Amino acid sequence: MSATKREEVSSHLRYIRLELREMHQMLIKDDLLPDLNEAKEVHAQLDALLDLLSDKELKKIKSQYGNF
Image (cartoon, rainbow, N blue to C red; front, side, top):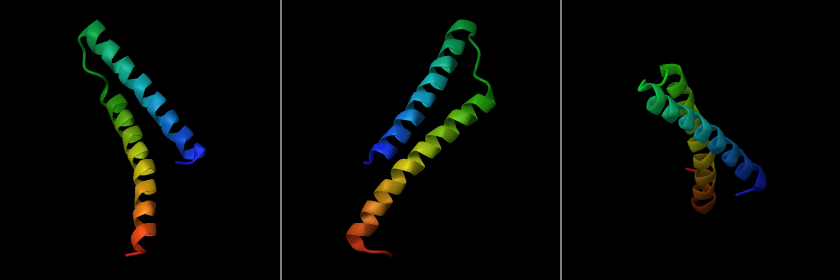
């Protein structure tokens, strides 16, 4: 994985970790569920991370077997 991609993945993971930590603290402190929009935002970040990683795997597969 290139250094740029690695930094992008690290950045996504740091952000997601922070958001999940805040949601967890809210659950513990106030016994409340997180805001739906916050949960959707974290989900979108996870999707972006998956796309970033999947793109790498898809390129690797295509290079091994040619374009489909």
